[in-house]
Structures are given as structure tokens and as C-alpha cells.
Image (cartoon, rainbow, N blue to C red; front, side, top):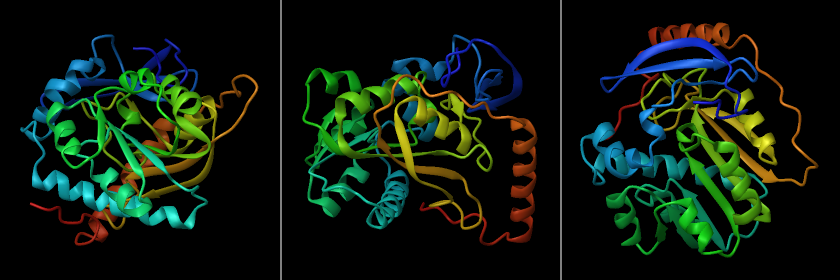
Length: 288
């Protein structure tokens, strides 16, 4: 697999792990520094993985379960709580890519009184969201083929780390789906706090590489923060960015990240220390 950020084929070994019984090997791109899965036979790069296997592998059930829905509600509440403090345009249409059961779309509809559209490859989850009145499609290609009206808010929450070619997808959003004054909302696991090594995670993003990705796709970051909601009070497990589209001439220069292995090692050592010092508040109880 080529680098998801810069498409370079040059890399060196970074880490080997296992996820749900499957071996996963990560390498680091020698051009931009992004850590990503190695090999051309990466299971999660196959579209059928999300249509047929993803939910079964991750939660042993292809239909929405109460625990997953509750976690999505907690996450959606947190995301929407951040929007009033930022210059959000009047949202008439919102789009959530990787919409799952449509819980974030529920929050958008309640918060903005807007039309809602979701992209979700999982059949059972897509049906669940559609039954709540959201317009749902299985793929971004299906949505683009409809030549839809532009959206004022587009979100990809825990989606970008699953993409084989995120730059092209974000460029498609920029040029074909997001209004010129619209906003893009993204959240991914933070490689400098999260375990990150998972079967479905094709890339491991740091604040630096996530910002570089957005720059390459034609966006300017206007909000960037780390947080642990809904899993931790102490650890910055997730990276959240709010970005706006900009007009740029050509591709901006790519700034490589250095010392990733050292920073990862230091960050995970800090995580272990926090867990030891604050055993009762580092990890929050999840719904059963």
C-alpha cells in the first residue's frame, strides 16, 4: 500500500501487532513521516470489508447494539457542543460520511433544523438511520452521482484513518459537496495517545500529519484540539479539527514529520504514568 498522505512507495518498518486475531504491520513513510499499514493485501482496503465484515469483527453483530448507540450519542453531544463557539454558517444541509446509525445526524437535525444526508456502507446501520428519516446512501460515489446541492457542514468522524486515499476524498468534498463558506469536521484517533494499531486503521495520524493532509486537500484548519470524550478524562485520545475550504494555486509544500517513533514512545510512557497516578479517572466507564 502506498502512503495515504503523499502516495510515496518508500517506507521503513515501524511496528508489528495483532488486531482481532489478524496480524497487522505498520511502516513509516520516508517522505512525509506518516505511519500506515503495509502491504497490498490490507483487509480493510477492500470495500467488502465494511459492507460485510466490519461490524461482525468489531462487535460480533452487524446490527446496531445499545452500547454502540450510547457511545455515539455521547460523541455526538460533545461534537455539537463545540460548534457554537466557532463561526459555523447557517446550516441548511449537513452530511455525515461514515454515518453509522445516524446518531450524529440526529444531533445535526435537532441542533440546526437542517436536512440530513449520510454515507454508510453497512447495510443494517444504513437502514437503521434511514428509518429515522435521514437520506442515506452506501458510498460517496453514489452521492456524487446524484449531483446533490451543496452542504454547509460535512463531517468524517473516525473515518479518515480507514481511508486508502484520503486526499482524493477530501478534495472531492471540497470541490463537489461543501459550500464555499461551509465547514469540515474531522475526528481521528491520536497516535500520540491512542493504541491506534487496529485491523481497520490504515493510517495513524498525529496533529502534524492530519494538518498536512487537510492542507494537501485544500483546507485551512480553524480549530484543532485533543480530547478523550467519551473514553477518558485525562488522555487526549482523539484529534478533532474544524476546517474551511480555501482557494489555493497548486499543491502546498509537504512538511515531513520527524522523530515520530521517539514521540510515540514518550507519549505512550506518559499514558502509562497517567493510568498509574489516576486509576479511577483515566478511563471512564462505558455503557453496557
